[in-house]
Image (tube, rainbow, N blue to C red; front, side, top):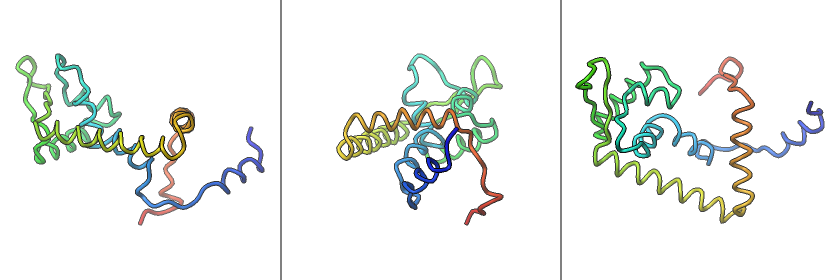
Length: 151
């Protein structure tokens, strides 16, 4: 178990950040519209993805998925079609605008990773990502809105 001294030492290393951090950008690529674009862009071209597939991949409810996909459709990033085989299923396709947005998002992420490698070196960047993934898997999300109200 961590000692009080170890905890205080780690806390001393932290410093305030604004919302435009690397972790915020990584998070945006893995959830919300960025996550949907990533999933659709990287999908096997022979596989038709449904709203249910996307929601499951992102770990979100069907209601949240429906709202997000409707917004993306209004923005011209995707098209939705009812399945010819099962009217309960909605098939999701990237539009050309969606493909362009996906490519821009990927290019931006590659640029961020490149900046990270240039700043701290490949080995430290790789270790950071591995460690971050391990910590995210090990430490559950803690909703602190009851402690610190959002602005």
